[in-house]
Amino acid sequence: MTTTAGDSITVSRRELNKAATREAIAAAALELLRANGMNGFTADDVANAAGVSRRTFFNYFSSPEAAIASFTQKYLDTVIEQLLLRPQDEPLLESAQHALTAVAPSDLATLAETFALTQGDAQLSRFQLEAWDNCSSQIIATIGSRLAVREGEGSSGMDVNGELYLHALVQSVIACGRAAVEVWFRRHGEDISPASLARLRELLVSAIGHLRDGFHS
Image (tube, helix red, strand yellow):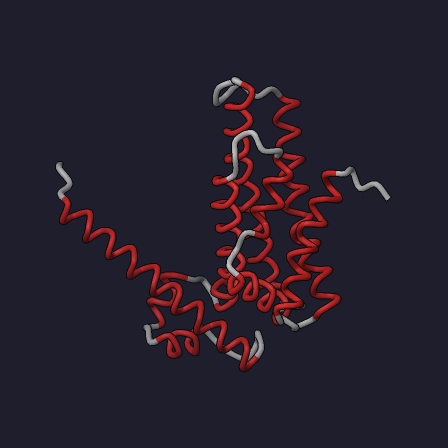
């Protein structure tokens, strides 16, 4: 079966429409979170605010918590995209420092705000943890390919020690990123001013720096 240019355009428009709907639902959930707190609205409220049906809401998200957690996923997707753009021969932890901080100010602000506004919600914490875990898996695949190319091993040539190194490194990077956000929140609470967000960027860089330096006191 041959795919025509018209078919490609139709598919592209369909995907763009789906992405726009997803973003509208997430944005509506965020506005309700700001106004009512995490337990102050339902999936129906989000659907109504976004101008979609209840069925459409559940086509995109399993719950209001999942809609809010999508902002964490969006940030982490950007981290992965930025990691792919780093030079092949760049030290991995330097690449991680750049990737964790090379996001739009608005995206970093939303990540910080949703983290601050949802502390103590067990279900949302689970969704956010899943987002970080999924990011780990994707980064492992990304860096694994990069290491294989760098060392001339091929896609399946990494030995067990190399695999252990890779998994330990990536899990440590992700833990450092989460730790930076948690420390930022303890110090700044719901403050997402430019100065506060600049401090969050500094903490992200510093956390990876501690890892790079072996956590020397």
